[in-house]
Amino acid sequence: MAEETNNGMKNNYTPVLQLQGSKLRGARVTQLKNHFVIKYKEEPEFFVRVPGRVNLIGEHVDYCGYSVLPMAIQYDIMLAVKPVSVPKLQLTNTDSSHSDFQCDVNSLSIEVKKGVSPPWHSYFLCGLKGVLEVLPQDSVGMLVAVTGNVPLSAGLSSSSALVSAAALAAAHANMLKMTKLEIASLSASSERYIGTQGGGMDQAIAFLGTKGCAKHIQFNPLLSEDVKLPDGAVFVIAHSLAVLNKAKTSDFNCRVAECHLAAQIMAKKRGLSWEKVSSLADLQSAVSASLVEMVDLVKELLHEEPYSKEEICGELEVSEGFLDQLSLSSNTTHISHFKLHQRALHVYQEANRVRAFQEVCQNETVSSLALMKLGELMRESHESLKNLYECSHPNLDKLVYLGEGRALGSRLTGAGWGGCIVALTTKDTVSDYINTLKEKFYKGNPAAVGKDLDSLVFATEPNTGAEIYKLEQ
Ligand code: GLA
Image (cartoon, rainbow, N blue to C red; front, side, top):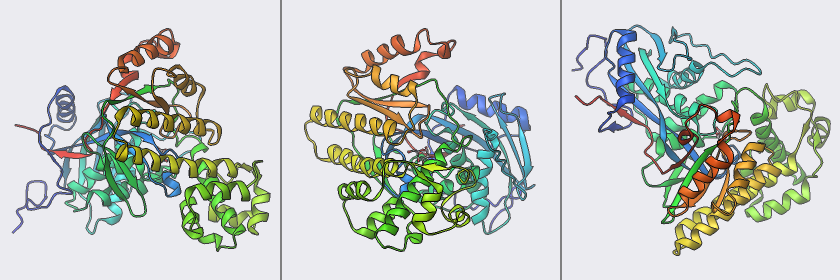
């Protein structure tokens, strides 16, 4: 029989996932635990750790249905949690610039205001809401303390780590049994409550990351396989000192819409039932063509000049109202012009680069050759993101340019418009590369004043995904 504990929880539960971290020690954990105890005058029952990620290749393709190749990094979000029978959520953050928050778990409201970065707790509420939607019973309440060292708005997925951590904590507190794939998909869809229509890459790697391996992640259905990187490869992350909160502007959703519209117009031109084509990958399956053939199809069917909204409605033979409903989101209905040719071209070529990257990792036995080929693919990816997808930033381009001849290749990582680059170096060249960026980009840069340069440019290696811990006694 289930025993009732003093907070009304049953003791014989099966935890969500079998994620039991073995050891959790260190100054950050102690600080988090102390913060929790001071705030709530109680001890936390468990801890959740969810890492940020760096995407090595495959940018802006996940929401088009194509695979990506990220790895989890050493920086993470950690939660200290105690489930309570009163259905109330209380949140506190060790970073005092993030104010405490509380609400009833049965009446969550996620604030989304045009042109404003959402408050930090909204990301937590997204993950919690996702779990509440699938929970067969009423939810318990939670006391939660949060700490994080993933750089914010840097393209390293700090928001998705918080959404995913909240979902994991809520599932565990409510004894909900889910697989890693299920909770990763749930976290991906619940993050859309914030207003951005991301794919599932960030949440998938947050749960599926493993030490020592990058991951090739496919969608619909979600699948992942290990990618062993060539011997000697060292990836470096460098912050451009420009930040972008993708929920604050419509840039991200505009790209999602452009890909969607490109797929629909091409489908219509090929005589398919275009309303059913929701992504560029859908279109590829519908026409049974290779990625290279899809590139030719884009060139044949879509013109380079931007499409006005009127022209799109004319092509699809629909009213503006219908288009808004079917293909656009609340923050993209106001956009008057869409670049369909360029965005679709990027997506099909980038999807092909992911395939090539994985193939090199799998089949190229001479590691120096493998490294050169991967570097080349990364350089091509950046060029395409800059010129066709137009989601780079002058600082990102400068970092990429400064690395020429020192890194084998580098590219913006994550959504772009600011944030970080990822560069491929080797054990022999990594120090020279990092020192060059420190000298030529960061030193004397007003935006870097007072910042620890080692936190702005650092080497990283594949890390473990999400875990749940009990504190070591
Ligand atoms: C953001 C989104 C991801 C992905 C990247 C771009 O991180 O959350 O799903 O689309 O941008 O590759």
